[in-house]
Amino acid sequence: MTTTHDVINPATEERLTSVELVGVEETDEAIAHAVAAGPAWRELAPADRGRLLRRFSDVVDDHLEELAQLEVANAGHTIGNARWEAGNVRDVLAYYSAAPERLLGQQIPVAGGLDVTFKEPLGVVSVIVPWNFPMPIAGWGFAPALAAGNTVVLKPAELTPLTAIRLGELALDAGIPEGVFTVLPGKGSVVGERFVTHPDVRKVCFTGSTAVGQGIMRKAADQLKRVTLELGGKSANIVFDDADLDAAAAAAPMSFLDNAGQDCCARTRILVQRGVFDAFMERFESAIKDVRVGDPGDEQTQMGPLVSSGQRDTVRGFVEDAEGSVDVAFRGSAPEGAGYWYPPTVVLPGGTTDRVWQDEIFGPVVGVMPFDDEADAIAKANDTAYGLSGSIWTRDVGRAIRVSRGVEAGNLSVNSHSSVRYSTPFGGFKSSGIGRELGPDALDAFTEVKNVFISTES
Ligand code: NAP
Ligand code: MG
Image (cartoon, rainbow, N blue to C red):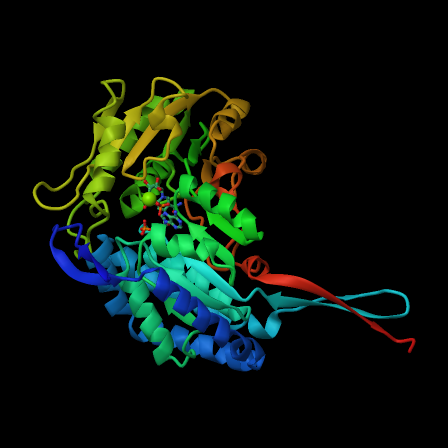
């Protein structure tokens, strides 16, 4: 029995297309193909595997605008973001195309022989992708996994399968052999679950909610299956009284409104030193009012709709339905009518235990709270189950370094909000996840170290 899923444009609520969902049987077949394709892929000369990945990167570049437009329609991403995201897939492929020839082991001094280590591929690697960044998160999984000699099965989110399906086709166009990289649109509870329970899948690389990630880790224990988990966040944006306040306030809106707040790195807790709190809020309010929310296809738009009506209900539930306990300081604008719109919303939590301050909302909502001194800023920033990213605004270099070291999070930026670069490691502390993606570290996540001793005495 085939089931299908209607793919909806979140800016218009119109049906874009419908996608056939893969079941358990087809998932098992794809995994069997991935197993069969493994040896030839692994044994390809390193330079040839690199060349194929470079070709894949070039083909993505040739289709950049098509992929970007597909994401605007499917996920409501602004066209500027969607072009960056397609470009990111290209760049991540190009970056890891150099890896097959640089997958270096070690030679370790021992008595009686030669000792060397190899970085061996795991076998079949599965990648489970969420709907918030369908292209980049897919690429961060499949590009290093393929470079390290694994074959890959990938499940996009049910809401946003279109760009992943297209990337699967482009891989074949680029000459990546059949079975090496297979995209399987389907339900998390079907295809995703099967990735976790199938004994031939050696690793699950998952990005999504903390609850689902925890369930995957529990089930993965049965087979000691490797996991990389990129989960939620509730990151702090710490503004000290010696910061360039104009710059900090101007940058704060897009640090939580990018992708309509559906970003695990969103800086959704702003901590402002007490002496400059009012001055910051004044500047921040005018910056929020200037954010252009609307048609994601318009080049001037900074924020589009939320991905689904369900996600909008969730976001609303944190603000409107919280029994009047949430104090809204000010809001930005949002279109009315069709589309899953929600305005930029700034709230003043009553205390650090408020839901709006503790839970990941995954929408355009930020809380702002004052702090007293450096120690208080670090304590408040760390008062969360999460630890993905964060920002520090100060002109004092020593303080910037002390606070960067003090905040328990995987990705920090000083006097900026950038945190994801394909050449640097990305991942979370605490409940934000396990393992690192991107940069040199990702290859370790997709290989096992093998030690070989060769006797020189016989
Ligand atoms: P989710 O359920 O964790 O979905 C993420 C991915 O996991 C999707 O591909 C999903 O497939 C799949 N999945 C779901 N259940 C699974 C299972 N039992 N086994 C294996 N795979 C499974 O996230 P969501 O429900 O879409 O979003 C809920 C909340 O999670 C958001 O509001 C946000 O707070 C958080 N979130 C965080 C991130 C992040 O980047 N860290 C990304 C997305 C969501 P289906 O799409 O088919 O269900
Ligand atoms: Mg879910």
